[in-house]
Image (cartoon, rainbow, N blue to C red; front, side, top):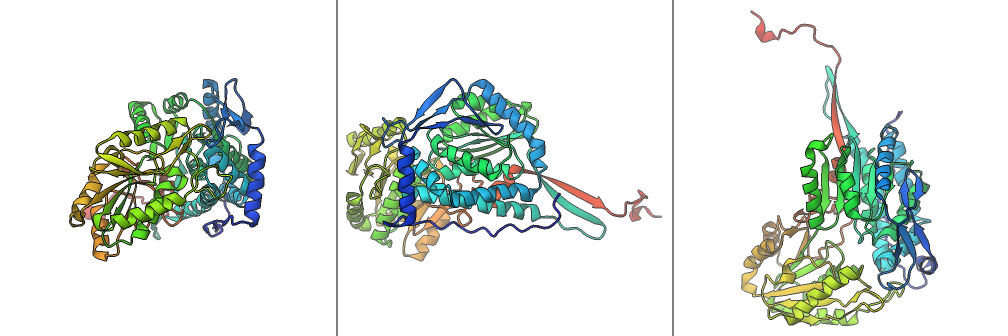
Length: 542
């Protein structure tokens, strides 16, 4: 029982370290990377606070060196899924009754463990398992995850303090209860921070969680589990299983105590989850909360008044950092004809200066894509463009999977605005450009709005403020995160809450109080001090 109105430490964004030559953080992460990549790590499931192994296991290999084995993980059998669900339900009463400040302290401690002793380990794990450069790993697995943990605790206190008005006759209060049952977190490969945030943000509000990380993010997921263990997370609160997504999901979504889904992944998978939930709605004890951040076909619109160098930089950074494997990555560009030649020249210079290879070489801006399936999908898009009359590969276009799944940053020039790579999510280092006549800017805005099923991120680059305002209004439903004179990616927790609508998800804005509100079930309590003793109202008097 709380005995004070406690204030948590003021949340501040973690400072991104530079990893400059000679810096202590550079030396530390190199040492950790070399140690980890030359070791063998077992990753068991995590159920009821215990490491659990099965008879079925699978190897873990770096995408940039897929013949090298750095570990193995254990695949869940039906009994493990059942155990994980039951364990969560068994832990629920004790966890939800823990005072909020003691729950919060666990996650604040986890943030500081990542900021300090685990920083190089979680960065190195992300570099190895997901082939991120040290810069991308630092932003993601260290800083963003730290920010999620710190700011979410602050948001929890803001939620709890949001109370209705009362008067001398009655006291009104809202109790923000956790959901009734267990929740399911499904996380992607591309952001270690998302993998850490989805289960923990629900847990800090008193929910119990079954977490299924992506099979290509398991190496860094283990570090998150190690951190939560050391931070003091009680047994059974977050349980982790790996393996057959269909099997795990089926068991979860058919369980009558399932009460919430927190998902980041593909639109098609999210749609299938939603359908299954709808088909089984009568079986659940309560209506499940469904939150998803899904696909994107993110755009850059460059007006004739835009600075060509700024446009080229926005494309290079927006489209090719982390090999375009961000749901927010720039993937289609609409460039005004009068500035295109200059943009093209500058963009070509950028791409020719980019080096590609292993993340252990800090000179590399680009590494490999995540796995062979992704490699084959992306290279097929490039091959199709090379053979199409409606498109032309004008930069890059080379690929090789001999050692790692390497695809060169590629720019496609579309001759028609609805070419396939202007419409479909590729999730790789491929940017498609359509050049439009200066006089058709307003038509282009309509085209941007209607070309894709997605509405995640987008950007307008222009010096003309009337143009900026026009684009902002015309594209109000085209992106949940809209950027003016910048690349359409790089949301910071506490500053740019993230999420999109249409085929991009439920727009519940991770990194804000809006998302956390989805994981509570408010109860209004009205207490009357002097209870009436006569049913008659004044209007009944004669």
